[in-house]
Amino acid sequence: MALKIIDYGTPEYYQMIKLREDILRKPLGLEFSPEELEKEKDNLLMVACEDDKMLGCCMLVQEGANTVRLRQMAVLNDLQGKGIGRALMQFSENLARDRGFKTITMHARKGSVGFYEKMGYIRNGEEFEEITIPHYVMEKQL
Ligand SMILES: CC(C)(COP(=O)(O)OP(=O)(O)OC[C@H]1O[C@@H](n2cnc3c(N)ncnc32)[C@H](O)[C@@H]1OP(=O)(O)O)[C@@H](O)C(=O)NCCC(=O)NCCS
Image (tube, rainbow, N blue to C red; front, top):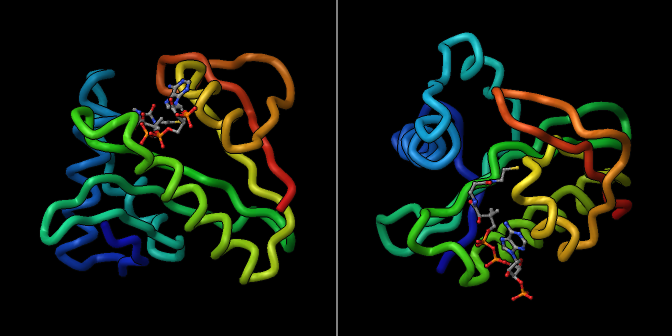
């Protein structure tokens, strides 16, 4: 498996959107708007691949001088639980650290809080609703 950064607007980026739609949006009856995707051009986009197949992805968005926000973490349904999510987290944390960030924050879906806790993230604050489902803010100091 290869972990890599991809560029906005490339064929790999559209492959990533398809993966995110399949795993994160369609199950909720939602899709991405062009305005939402337009904002991604400055983000750090990361994927896990095996040959031409995209297995998982996530992205980092700068939130301040020292903080980045992790978004859009998704692994193909039939490959979950095999360590791909962990590898993507380690890859993105190393990139964030290399770029001088001190904190990673995120809006974690309630169902994935246990995964992020295993990665060393801590819940911060009360449950809230986003894209129709419960979330928590979670954070980790790098
Ligand atoms: C959440 C997700 C990204 C995790 O990726 P993954 O590749 O399945 O996770 P890994 O196999 O690397 O798991 C690492 C550890 O976390 C645990 N884990 C994985 N998903 C978990 C979950 N939802 N709840 C609790 N623990 C979980 C694994 O059992 C494993 O534990 P171990 O080290 O003790 O064996 C993936 O399951 C996914 O895409 N889910 C659907 C989309 C989603 O909810 N994304 C997150 C949006 S905030």
